[in-house]
Image 1: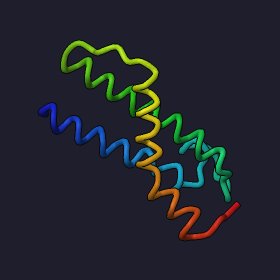
Image 2 (image 1 turned 90 degrees about the horizontal axis):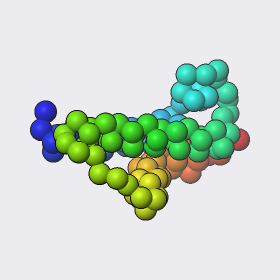
Image 3 (image 1 turned 120 degrees about the vertical axis):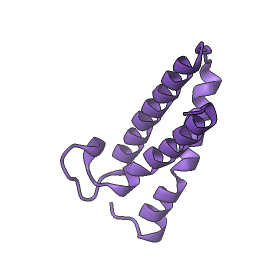
Image 4 (image 1 turned 45 degrees about the horizontal axis):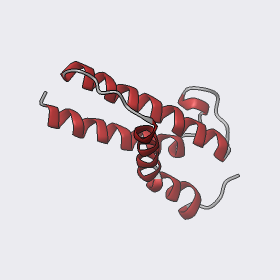
Length: 101
């Protein structure tokens, strides 16, 4: 798989991961059903899935060549990107369907 395809696949995975907390009512995606699940759980899941996505990106980068060291700015931008990716799920859950909490 080419580097470009891996990058696009990682972005697609990040988009899906960012919207998962707003689609499911399960705690941490595998736990018990909580209807309605609080916004705090959804944000915690978003942060954890951001870490998984960043970790996968680092794994791909290490597989391609030498992994570059990242500073705090990289992680801030990654979190902002995931928040931007999560906007459709947030809109669907809280703005279009109504507030369930």
